[in-house]
Length: 414
Ligand SMILES: Cc1ncc(COP(=O)(O)O)c(C=O)c1O
Image (tube, rainbow, N blue to C red):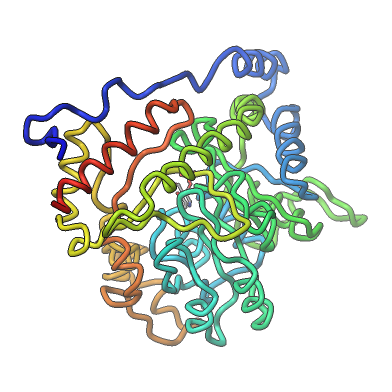
């Protein structure tokens, strides 16, 4: 039995994790070109246009619209789909606020459905349970680089006439039965915030194949200005409903072009690391690696396994403390609670001083949020262990992480 580092033994991780640079000459060159245009406005310049073409090509989508963040992209998607006051939109309780902010800004009602215990993503059955005559759309979050089971989800959505937005903020180049996540629903949304696979500081994109949705999304991201007036007599300022300014600027577009060249190799490296980590720790008592569905490919924005404390012989906190002492970063849990347990939902306080949109007369019914709503999701958060993944990690990093987990697991099995 190897002595745990926690108890004074040698650390399983013998060298620091490899690191690398995310930005370099290609980004600088793009930025120089953007500045040389003498405009940083997307409609006049060429960078955002080139970036959206390039992203659409990569995803083999007909259209791509740029936005100022992933949150903005999801809001634009909902705006383009016509989501409005009194509508219900089903989404995941384990996600970033960015998945629900747009729902609330459209004065619609977020409805949370439960998750698969192994992929941590929405299931078709859980979605169907939540459908009412008010349901208009589903925002399917592909968590941590891994795809939700989209075929049954699309079948349920089509059966009930619902639109599907895929939130791929954490899941670039993630595959579901060979298809890219983001190309399966009606609109796929992505984030370029600094923590994602690729970064432009902040930024977002939407992809879609319907021409009409493209024009609606394009307008919604830009104050509903009509920059393509087609019908005789119509003008740019024929504005009939509210939309924000979520435009991407040329500097962001420039960096994003260069980042896109790095994307496939980043996702490939992360995918390989995560899959090999799963192979390396499979079968350890009480440890459940994340499940990638058959024919799928995760790009592991992070790695999240679950612990059964009884079978593992150790509490989650003690397991994490032992692993950290071995030199392997990890943390118990992911977000502190399901999103529906955040004060904004518990108190229905989206807009200060009111309970709008939850008490909207256009909604006219009651919605309750709080613990117990999605038991599987709550169980996932109570048993999750999150570990970082990075494209710069080496084979030695991987082998030492596996060795550390195996060592800690063996110790508590004694
Ligand atoms: C699943 C998910 N959706 C949406 C977002 C929002 O993206 P952004 O931070 O670019 O607004 C994030 C960001 O963390 C995310 O993880």
